[in-house]
Length: 89
Image (cartoon, rainbow, N blue to C red; front, side, top):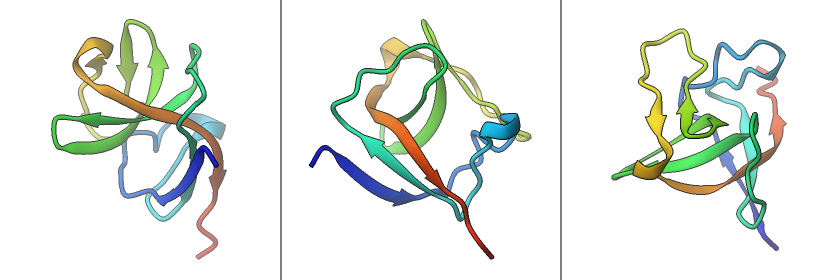
């Protein structure tokens, strides 16, 4: 299988309108899928993981917090978020 499920602990996509993803949600990430403009991707930046919107040549944070946008060349894309399972609490 080329997917994994992980709990969201980041606030980088908490202000993306109907596509918002919040801490407590779960995401399913496909490691084989190539991202296209507008996809949410899971990334590794040095020693930290997060999720961002793929908008080449940048990764955009859609957040209520002050997260920087990132240059694609400086991070590793681990996969494309293909499903969000909302926290039901």
